[in-house]
Image 1: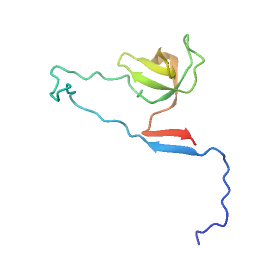
Image 2 (image 1 turned 90 degrees about the horizontal axis):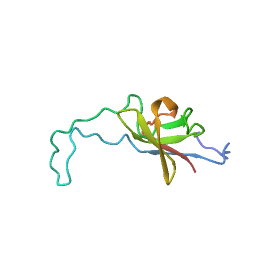
Image 3 (image 1 turned 120 degrees about the horizontal axis):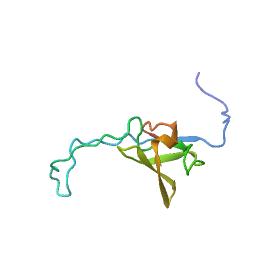
Length: 110
């Protein structure tokens, strides 16, 4: 009961899933000496978008870019995306379409 003689895999590329979490949030930032920074007001990032979301650029001058991660989410609605290791571009939230929302896990093929 529960034992198998053989196991046949239907794929040659297994999906590797790693738990990365959602980061941490601080109410007030601290300086390099550990003291609280005064006068700091948290800016709210653009609604429904988080760093790590996978998007397609569907409009604008960078339109054919597919399946890239958001690197920086700003309050104004302009996002930085890393196209390759040395190139980072800025796009508007009106020019992107979500493919996968960041859910606290990192997915890759083994």
